[in-house]
Length: 165
Image (tube, rainbow, N blue to C red; front, side, top):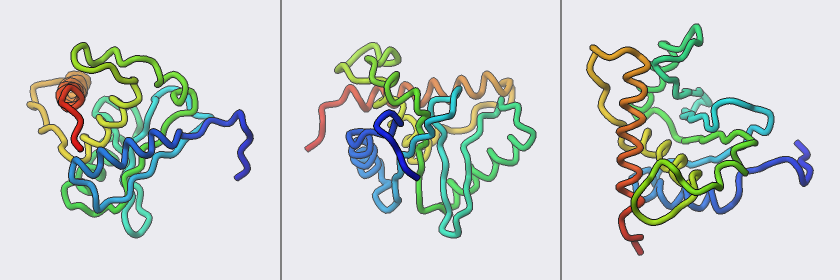
């Protein structure tokens, strides 16, 4: 594929950041790939696990309206639990490459950082240290919100810690 100077790509800084955090989170034996979908709108990032046979497992929210959402979510969780993947791919939407450079509004304390750093770390945590499944009493939307809030708290905590050498 030929790319011109106007086609967004994931900056090298993001790749370096993701690899560094993946190593710190215990994902050092996994390949970490950040890709860019310049024509996708809507969701800023898509998290995928790729198996050694090329099988793709896409993280899917409980509240997704996709016909196969439950099956996709279960396949993702199974691959995660069994460790039957070798690559973690974070696919960044083209528009987010520039929009993600704004200061993070999710973390209210700690050192200032760009929003993309929070988002990339959150997706890596979703793989390295996924939050427990919430109680069945919650609606799918409430469960998604609870999971996201737990991950955001964990990211804020990690980013507020002094940098490790």
